[in-house]
Image (cartoon, rainbow, N blue to C red; front, side):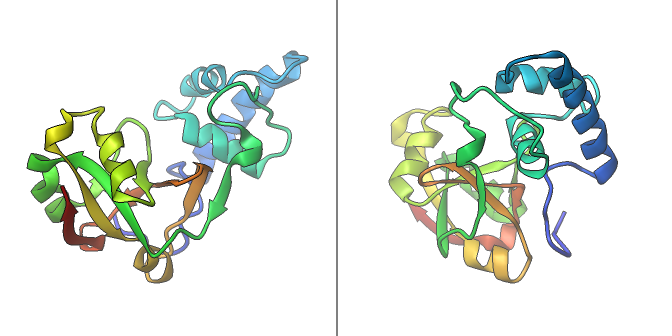
Length: 177
């Protein structure tokens, strides 16, 4: 699916956003303390089955009444929509590179694709999926994703960027082994 206008949400539609916000607010109204982000994900998954941490981040960004404990890796005060560097890197295993060049990259489970500002960081991330010798970094034209296709990027850790998907034509074909 290619973006045709501003991509401002990780939710599939505004109705899902509203349902998730209502479910989470119901729990927060009964709690005196902020809740852990993983607890928040479990709460909204009953309503929006594809929800993940990125959806909670969006809820926190769009609705100031949503609060999370900051003892997780994701602290809502550090999450922001950003303009990424012109070039980012996607980590994968070498035998999967042709698939991404042909079909693009999207996550079925997380709802976002993680990109990195250096090829080395992308390869380290790819080691979760294969041995270091087979890991590669694929170059992504992030500048065109923003300026031509209006993709929105978020970040909550320095050097890492999340986006809903990477279209096939935004992989430059350059690979760093």
